[in-house]
Image (cartoon, rainbow, N blue to C red; front, side, top):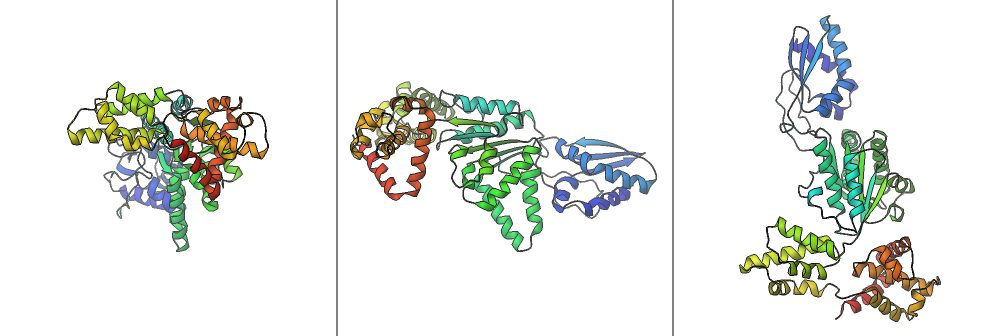
Length: 455
C-alpha cells in the first residue's frame, strides 16, 4: 500500500512547481495505510490545510483508481515545538511514502527580536496613537487597518512596534507564518535572485516569490523607504503587496517619512501604503523619556535613582536609542568602577555625551538664531508671509525646532503664528530632503545648529 501512495504522490509532482513541492508537498508524510484508512502527518496546521486544499484531492483520485477502493484520510499534526510553522523540508528519500521524522529548519525570514513586544514598549503622548494602532492590527489582522504604516524619525520605536505586532499575532495564531524583513533585505534578496536567474537559476525566483507572496500570513517590512529609486525592486514589491493584500494577509510597514513624501517611490506604491492606517511615532516628551530610562534600568537590573533618570532624560532628547545608549554607558561605568549609580557618577560618565546634545534650547532661541542668520525679521518669520526670503528661513527654523527640542509638530506650529501641524511636517520633510541633495544648504543648517549647541 505504501507503494501505491508513493506512486500517487509522484503522479502530481509534474504539475506542481518545484518550490511548492519542497515547501508544501514533501513535508507531508504517510504514517500508515490500513483497512481503507490513511494516516498522514503534517509539521503544522498550516501545512495540513494547504495540503488538503491543493494536493490531497488529486492524490486521492489517483490512489483510489490504482487500489480500486475508497479511502478515509486522518491527519496528525506535529507539536509546534517540534516543527515551527515556517519549516522547509529537506529532499525525500527514494520512497516518498516512507515515514519521515520531521526536521526543524530555519524559518524563511529573520526571527523576531524577543525584547520587542508590547509589554516592553513605553507608551506616552507622542506614541500613543501608533501604539493603539499596532494593538488594533494585532487584535484584528487584515481588516480595515491593512496595511498599517508607521512612520517617524530614527530611534523612536517604529521597529519595536512592528515587531510587537508580529509577536502578538504569533501568540494568538501560532500556526501563522510571520515574515519579518527589512526593506534593504528584500532588495538584496531580489537582486541576488535576479543575478541567479541570469545564470539559469529559474527556480530561485519561484522560491523568492513563494517566500514573500505565498507563505506569509503576516508581512512586516521595516524601513520600506529603502525601496526608493530601485525600480525593479519596487515593481516586485508592488506585486508582492498586491498578492498578500488580495489574499487578506496583514501587512505592516515602517518608514522615516509619510507615504506621500517618500522620494523615488512610484505613485502606485505610495497610494497603496495609504489604503489602511497611518500612524506617526514622534520624539518622546520629558515624562516619557524618564519612563523609558527607568524601564530600561529595570530590564538591566540597575538601581537608578529618580534624580539620575531625570538628569539623563532632560539632556538626551533626540531619540530612544540614544537614551538607552546613555544608560548602558552609565551602567558599564558603574560596573567597571564597582560603584553604585549616583548623580556624580552620571555627570562624569555622560559628560562628553551630553556636551554633544543641545541643552536649554527653546523654539524662541532657535527662531532668533535662524532669523539673525538669514537677516529676516522675527515677526515676519512667525507671520503669514510666503515670499521665499521668509518662507525658506521659516522652514529651516521649523526643522531645527523639531530636531533640537522635544516639541511636537502641533506645538511647533503654534509658535510660528498658529501654523497647522501638517505645514510643520511638510517643512521638516522638505529640509531633510534638501539637506541630502544640496551641500550648500546642509552646510548652512549645520552652521546654525553648531551655534545653537554652543553654551
